[in-house]
Length: 64
Image 1 (cartoon, rainbow, N blue to C red):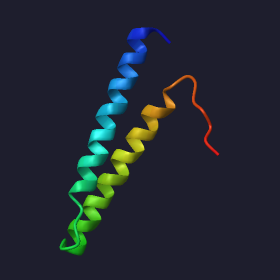
Image 2 (tube, rainbow, N blue to C red; image 1 turned 90 degrees about the vertical axis):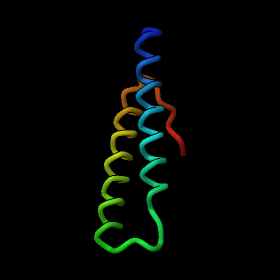
Image 3 (cartoon, rainbow, N blue to C red; image 1 turned 120 degrees about the vertical axis):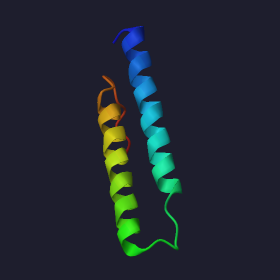
Image 4 (cartoon, rainbow, N blue to C red; image 1 turned 180 degrees about the horizontal axis):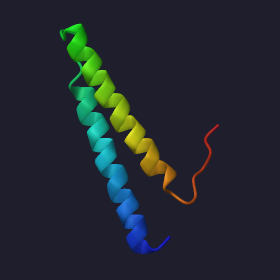
């Protein structure tokens, strides 16, 4: 992977981490059930996007 490709993958990972953090911060205990379900769905979507970004890395360490 070239330096430019690595930089782009790192940038996408950083963006996706930020999205996950923002989605998680919107969760609170006073939400109505429908709003909570919507926010959890958004969190699941952003987590999935982060996983896809991580899978783009050519060399991943497998954590036990």
